Amino acid sequence: PFFWPAEISSNRLDAYFTRMAASSLRNYAAEAEAGVSFQNSHRHDELGFGRSLTGTFEETTELARVLAEFYTIPGLRLNAVSTDDYILGVRSGLLKDVSIGFYDAFFRCSLCGQNIFSWDCPHIPGVKYPKLGERGDVVGEELAFAWVENAHLSEVSVVYDGATPGAAILKAQQEAEGGRL
Image (cartoon, rainbow, N blue to C red; front, side, top):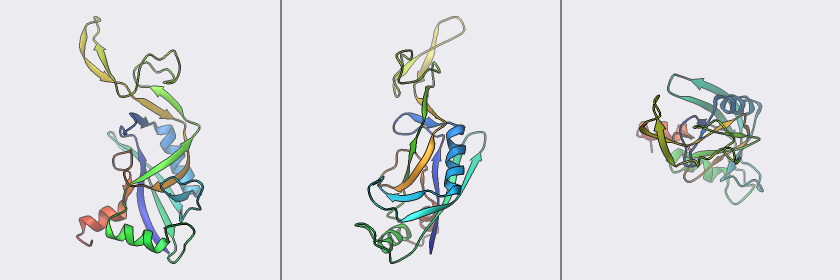
């Protein structure tokens, strides 16, 4: 078997102006531990070419993230990409970004706390709004984003450019840092 570790998600602000809440990240870790499919580019209509073995939630004062380990076997062709091609892509550092598929999430506005999709929330993720001080005066700007709460992990995919900074196959990073590409 071929094994690889990956950071699959974190609470970093992503390209969609969302951040994963700890509740979602804990769910992702538990579900990766139970085993989820590793896919090619979120192609849910194709068979996966790997599976998770572990899932770990890590949290520091600045960062919360989920690490997982995956495996596949060489010589398997289920779809257009063989596992041999995938393994070579990881070893060469060409394949590194990952992305997750998730479901049943609640999207809470970072500014007002309301459901970002409801009429009660006047904010749009990615837009800056005036930040008011204690006396009601404008003291700066705040970026609106959505916290993704209580989401569940459906799959992890290798992608050409993931939305979440740092979500990557760690083996590719380790190989590149060690000069073994």
